[in-house]
Amino acid sequence: MNSYYTTNYMSTLKLYSKIKCNQKKQKENNGNHTRYIWLLFATFVAILILASCASDKPTYQFNDSDNALSVYHTFLSDLRGKKGLTGDELVSTVSAWMELRDIVYNFISKDTTFRAHTNLPTAFFFVHDSIRTEMNRLAVEQDRSLKDVLRVKKAGSMYNKEEEIRTACVSAQPFFAHLDSLAVYKADKTQTLAIYRKFLDQMGDGEVRTLDDLKGIISAEDRIFRTFLTHINEYADVSLTDITKGTERLCRNIYGNAANGDLDAREVMVYMSMRTNRRLALNATACVESINRRDRLTDAQRHAYFWMMLQPYIGIDDFGMAVLTSGQEQLLMGYADELQRMEKTHKLGERNMNISETSHLLLKLYISTL
Image (cartoon, rainbow, N blue to C red; front, top):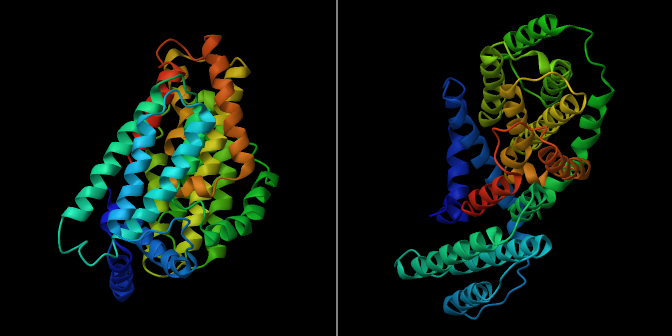
């Protein structure tokens, strides 16, 4: 069962209270990266729920839980009669499913029998799993593209309609737009790696107490990362493991400060997700430009490029989709077409999966999480 359903609003709020009570204790606790992110995410979800519960206006009205489940089952029956959805139809169907799923579950979870007996949740999940099966069928009945993957993931994000996220994202956009005005370093490959390693060594365990601290780190890292990408075709024989680990340590530190209450959870989630989106888009851009420049690449490099260009469609999660800017969305839609052109002209090498097959796989993997 999806944890999205099994943790209701009240238990999430209790979890938030527990986190707040233990914040001072967490300052002395150097847990792992996953634990920090989990704590931060739980805190953020609780804040989000507090802000949005009162303003929810469901578009469905149910008489009782049986009626709600009946409406959900009708949706399933309609899906079973559908065949060959276009890309637009697939996106709109996923969006409608997500809306109905949330409304039905939120309604029946308030039923006094929901926790006392298993019949009600079992009935819900039976219908829900059947809908997921039908959605997977409809997703792969015809050729799909990475455009379809991006649009379906954006339609499926549970954060799309949250006003606080939209407001925070709009507020952060000028900062990220300003990063493009910072010139990259005039450095060769060796000098760039030295700059990168020095930065990560200095910042990995530093204090991040304010939003300005966070912006300063993101800004400095972004400039170095863009410099790093100017030499993307030169790293075939270089181990970058230490840079990867250093970046993980930096992120762990930032999330840790947020989990400890030193930073606002919502701001950290928004800025770090927008940072990730930007890095994925920049990385894909560098790969596309390298191929189009006809840089001399080994088969292994072309294979690596292929997966780096796929990363925006794989790696951007639900929250990231909600803070994806319109410019980034348009860019990635264009790269979806570019990847198909590269495939047809054999610029991607011979070791990679067919784009349509890859899109089917990504859609099935994503729908399986809904």
